[in-house]
Image (tube, rainbow, N blue to C red):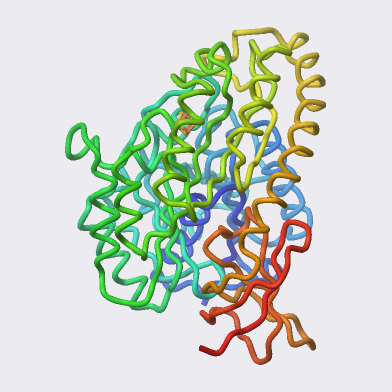
Length: 445
Ligand code: SF4
């Protein structure tokens, strides 16, 4: 039996793709291994939407290539898709585009039969949301899983390469999503993280304009079983306001909102092709918190986009102080070829702006980490449900997350208690804030 290993880079949506690749390989008779050293086939499932991700993808590819001269190495994912025609990488045994993963078994066939020294290339153009890509293999920790409800994006923000790579919005059908959610709950997953480029846009390509996402969330929340739903990424300009009420009425939908505002200054936002400003965005934050005082709000902000001057940065700082996000991620604008923003300024000007933006980013992060620490204080003294991620070997401690902590991106909760196992769902009392994490004790109710 041949063995396969997948190295998954990039975001949660790419992780779902890696899981689909593993599931398809398993169905074809491959054995899954978590050690690349043992694998006959190694797939590097890359990210490729900004400069640093592209660099990481190529570096990872070469470190595997050099360490594993015997293995067949497949370059897959966003980088392979984006640069499929231009990529000159004879060291790769195969290139695989990511539009329709159901062709992966065909790629494996071709790889098995390829003559030594020939590169297999396969880039299916069909829509994968219509294909059978059932997942039976998972890469998350026990108890937590990602559920992707659509591919691509119709927003076309001027800086973003994702629509170039993943294409326009292609939603999975309501029935398909609900069936998969049911199967995941039956497998024992407690935390189902709903992901897409923009959750709020789900369904508009299938069912016409309107807020289909809120009704999908209500349908998912009504399934039988012991589970919670976490929503990851909703575009602020098309935020479905009815969702707030739906969260209020359904305790299974966590009051956790990840809204990538990107900026607050109208000049910068218009350049990005986004329609908000500080007032409307802060208004949305207020509206959520008024209806849901326990709401946790995460955002992502971008520094260094063309048009960002001191006045724009001051406005952004004001926004961050006013909105008091629970969590904030920030990144520096990456000038991506083939995006409309690419020609907004030349390389020299971009580099100069980048330096300034890096300083502003530090300033912003310092302010935010103080806000996050303060926001965390409100959990102290409360009792919450926690999902155990990892017991700490040799100690009566475990790392876990409560509803305010999304996988991989936010802080953690350290629980003091005996015999905890990965995937356990337990009740904890929060005792203290430690940096950006929480400290808790196990409660037996
Ligand atoms: S909404 Fe997100 S994925 Fe879509 S174009 Fe804008 S930044 Fe890119």
